[in-house]
Length: 222
Image 1 (tube, rainbow, N blue to C red):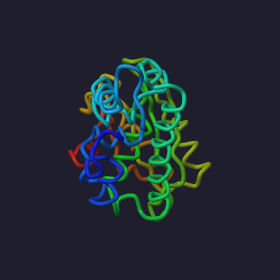
Image 2 (tube, rainbow, N blue to C red; image 1 turned 30 degrees about the vertical axis):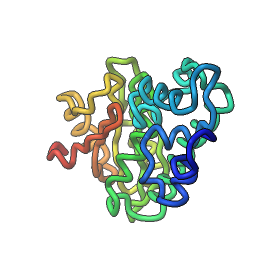
Image 3 (tube, helix red, strand yellow; image 1 turned 45 degrees about the vertical axis):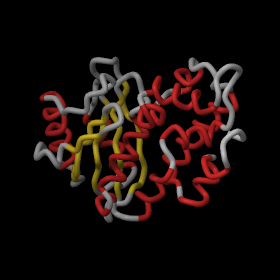
Image 4 (tube, rainbow, N blue to C red; image 1 turned 30 degrees about the horizontal axis):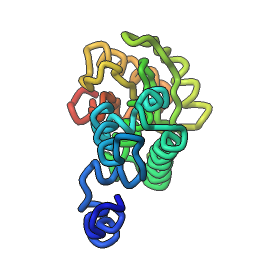
């Protein structure tokens, strides 16, 4: 970076023009700071984004995938993982402070960060209070790449233990395609009926794929 004119260096450009002025590679290069022998930091940033499938893939990349990329040593991997965790915690704080559907996009972003990194199927529940603020996110069931077994009685039990008034259901599709299946629709209706018996509302079921999330409520499937 020192070889570039000051106005073209990512840090100077960010400070003078704002982060939106930087290209994806420049933003990541600013975080990585250095490359490795034979490959500068901009080339390394481009390599990381290419191998991960852009920022969406990078945010959801598990530690072992980052470790497989040449040039990402422990220090760089730690910094990238720390940035992702900061994003997760910031979104969680926002969902705890206000009703989740005041900003529905944040719910999708939060769940995409939480579940998108898994290479196996995970079923999670956002437990909400009477004002629809986040009480807790819990990953209740894990399965194979093809399916997971979800037990309605366990979801009901946790809702009662947490004194939840409503829930948002969510699970990931490790294939990367965030399209609800017929099985997802059936599961949603089963859980909706079970939770209604204890006066807990199912507000949505969000399916997470690679870098995207689909709301079944928005699709009229709830």
